[in-house]
Amino acid sequence: CLLWGGDGARTLNCYGTNLGQPDSSSPDEPEGRDQAGTVVTGESGYRIFSGDSGRENLVCSSYSSSWLPDDPFQTTVFQGEDGESNWSSSAVWLDEGYWAIAWLQGGGEEDASGLIGLLDEEFGLVQLHRFSSQGTENPRLLAFGGDLVLAYGNGGVQLERWRLEAPE
Image: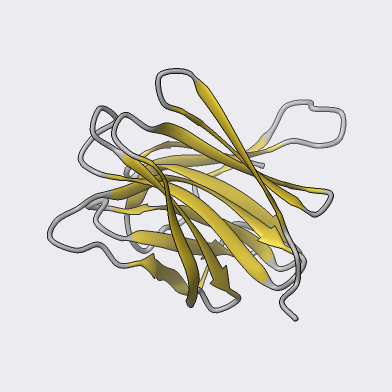
């Protein structure tokens, strides 16, 4: 399923395995959120990590497997301070019971810096790392074979890789 559209006018297109004509619907969203984010699919539904409607806070919007808003619909993952923007995120669920989330912080792409956070299942912050200063774009995360790979733009494509190990 793909969720398309701008504020107030979103369409959900769900395709079958043959990618034929989609079934379309307009999901009811209780609150607005920023468009620059990522969708993570799980057994119980979908999670969209993005800025809130004002981009001040990084939020997780939760939907059931049929794209109906969960209750609670939005959870604040990272609280912004002093009017800073938190937006354009990428997230992965790690089998160890943690979320890894990378996002941009700042007013626009020319002055945005990149942050990556490790959070527990309830979005409690475990560790925070600034991976880039000004001019950061499009952070993307991938968990692969015990590694966490981060790609982002900053005057070219940058890659960082961390080995994930359970605490002793």
